[in-house]
Length: 220
Image (cartoon, rainbow, N blue to C red):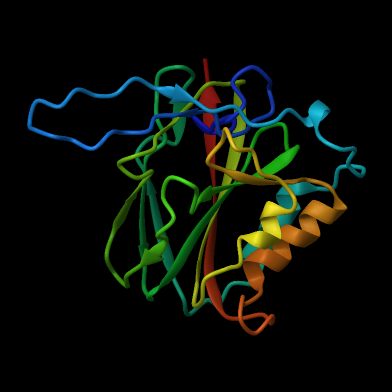
């Protein structure tokens, strides 16, 4: 898991594959500004949360969303390191869209228990992306470090024409100690995630969007 990344994970102590070590940068006051210490945000464990339904094919959820993309709307993703060493490497992406829109990044960790909305998040809420302008992620004030366990993580990147309503996911999962919202990989969570990503906030109907599903490995 990565947050760091959920395996690229947010839950450092459990193999939950959630976003885990988040480094929040301080505002630089000069050229000799020191790199701030890492702040580890822990996501709530599954055991502490309310009971969930029988797990569904989580990766199929992300594939279903990708399959609904408009082929005329493109998104290009470059990964600095498709394989990350645990406790050493950081996630680094470059994203470019052929349209103006709003960028969303969803993570499914290697345990496939939860979906995490990596971007936008509480530390970086401005997810507007300009056409044909490469954007580097994570942002300057947050980083995602591979913290294990070993396995494959999936990232779905999507650019929509209109912004999404975060409240649809906030009812599913939110933790004051973590910058990321999450949705359980059960029937309800799957339905909410698909609705959140594919439906317009204002019109409550499907709209055209671009999407790309990629995988990232974590190794010892």
